[in-house]
Image (cartoon, rainbow, N blue to C red; front, side):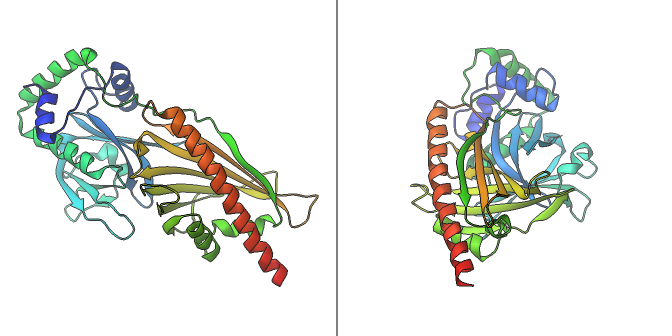
Length: 354
């Protein structure tokens, strides 16, 4: 029985080898030898000081993590042979699905230390992964690969060599591996509002106005973290919420990373965000990236202009790409128009009453 056949038996579902193109991209990403091949990959968050959106990759020999947020790349991998324990953390109020903790043997995985949240009392590195699009699928794959360690190194090597020899003949179940995508951004909203920048930025402060407006927009259990300084003049926060039935017929959740910085030659701010989706059809195939630019209009007191750009970063290819793009752009444009109209109405009514 070859490696993937044994994997299929353990996982209980069909697992096909990825295409030669995808495997080549995977090996290049983590600088792996030619015989290495990708078994599966999942969108998730790496939990350190703040959650980091990225993807978790599994091969017979390694677990790898890669993230590219606002051009800041995080990448590491460690060996399955270095894994000492795998634990499931039950869902919490803030995280609606289970999380995984992977603990390495003491003294192992030091090259990947920057990805660990810390060490346990025994000095072992601990890695936390959460917000999987499909936790059950990811957990089954992880446990099946880890169980394969019971095979002798010679048995594993024979299986992997046979699998890599036939990979050109197999059909790919997943899509192409996208890791260095150049996201095309399109304007989806532009308007002048009868409030100044300082007032409008209350919408991004995490205060009562933001909570009230996002709840009106259909975001349930809206939960932003505090803004934290991550580098010179750049602040970052995380936001999580669930969709009500008006936003998504089947529900689902969103997790967003936002960065905020002051514009250099204009009186205003830019807010960039990357949103990942959980519990949404094909949500593991893409991220939504947006950029808000808010500046005062010098010729008009108490007036600011707002521009919003949107792009989709494709993580896996899908035949529904055009349909998804059209739907995301259309729905986001409508939602932003309604949202900023409500915000302007709220802020101007307050200034008029004072």
